[in-house]
Length: 239
Image 1 (tube, rainbow, N blue to C red):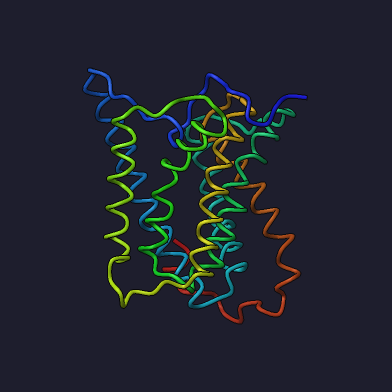
Image 2 (tube, rainbow, N blue to C red):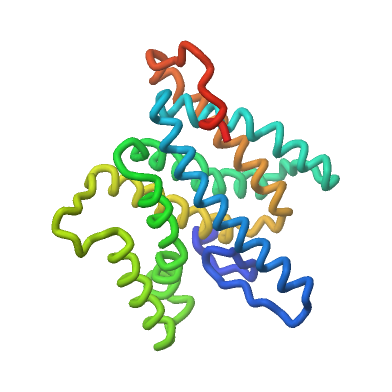
């Protein structure tokens, strides 16, 4: 049986840093990817907090993923790609769904207990956690002295950002725990997708993972049928 976290040649943004080459187009693409990631992980926690203020988290996720699927399919058509239904591709979709279904479920469960800024910061630690897992559990890489220094500076900066030095600052422990679990599911998903090594286009991978996650949310809805929204939520929670 193939090990779950067998090392593959394929890399992921969460586990390995992108190296900008000398080409201007490459540098521009790298900068664009960085800006896109910052925007996505700044707005996603905010949307989560908005959602749980109006409707139950399970229904909010179902609505969001229902809206995301047509957009993903349009992107596939635009890039002239198709969903792949080979055994390895489906397994890769399921691995990606760990970071969509599992991570987003716990993220939304804790969204009414912690501010969106805290959620963004917790998810911002995912590259650090990925590096630590890769170094200590998977024995793939070793941190250099400069990397350890950077990790220490990042942790100190986070403590100031979170206001942990303030005696009057309090965090909801349950909310923080739920968001940490969500972040760990997100990290686990990146390693799982890398381990499968399906080598499919990123848009195809994301579309397949979104479909699998949507099916998962459908299976959850019967348990929260009593929280069925009586009216369609406002536009801001659907973006």
